[in-house]
Image 1: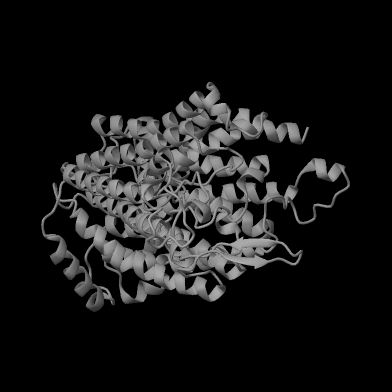
Image 2: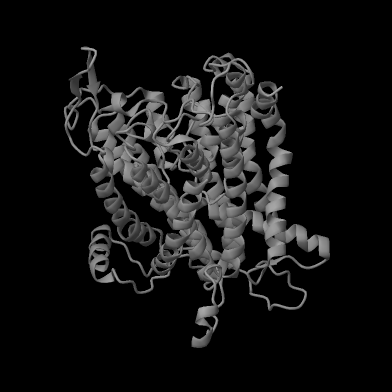
Length: 577
């Protein structure tokens, strides 16, 4: 517990400065790095013919995102289909099969990074760099760009201008993702993560047999996969293998990397939507760290943190409780349930990593989620089903704001006040879009799960016929729809059925949500600001924060609890009967 508390305390120290920097980048304010980055950005603008002064409304912004992403999907798909060419292919990897290529390219362009393959044996170094690593930068930057535009829409300072997508994309890559990735990459190389173009090395083991050891440009991929909340991995075992995550220090670096930007987005949001206040010099010392978030940012950050901490506590104590059947057999479980976990991380860092990767929708793993205790797997699935506990690449913030609008509407009805948020009236049009945005996520998860359990093609991949088998299916579609990418890897998912269904869940889970949420921001953006009165519902209070958390849990219970009862909850009850 001490390890976890120290890790979270350090995170709180670094997330606020990063949020302030992200705010300055989003609002084109001056930063210490401008003399260097301005030259790089201007050169890219000139080559690409980008006019940063030319703003876009929400429709044009979304169209620019979709067209750019679609073109990159086509290029990436072609590379995967011809990767057998002798270009950065020292191991002679063959071309990737058609349905798997489609699944992979949609996975990495939607920032999901779901892998139905083992990277070291299925991808050439060219594919690892030109498709996987490249997509990790662009997909993460696309998500953050949309988030920034979404917040601009909520502020409503300009009734039609949400910014320029291409400018936002470039600035986020050059000023945030690339510098952070270089720093993390060098740190990981120092800790022992490979970074080379060499092919596999055949080594002689102690037993006298031979073993192929895969190498490649691992550190660069590892850095952006966590910074961009991407997930995936160079190796099939992901961050559980020492070549991706060799030490406790690399584990902490990867934890902070995946946590920093989603949390910083909340700080950015709070500063962008808050009204500027004049603070006297004598009052500076009285200003708490939470006030730096701004009133609305504090509400969102507190709600996210509450759900995260509750999930972390449940996951930690569930894993520490171990397996009662092993206890009955006389086997000591003083270290907790160590099945599927790395000894160098233990239960504490594994539970923290599991809760973090599914809360921040990164998808990287440092332990086998298929071997989590039922309640540990329950927490991982629930946080992906909610898809708003910080979330990744700005999407978590956007999803949380949707629930804020829902809470404003419900509380307004309960106390007889007109629903308002950030000085704009929330009316029927916005609430219809909010309802649609909330419904589409469970529709994808539960709809595809129902198809899988009712067809031979879906059930043939399940390795466990009991309650855990349903959990494997449910986890796969929860991960896909939430653009997370982790999985209960007991599922044999590399076949036509699973490649196509998860590709559809990833595609609509990403782009349908973005289109609807941007439409909401565009609608609020065009409205006249109303004056705050005594009848205005305050959304920056602790009472509202509690209401927000309760409504989120109620929605989760009404939507997902029945199917969770048939999976991890039933498995837990049977195990501890």
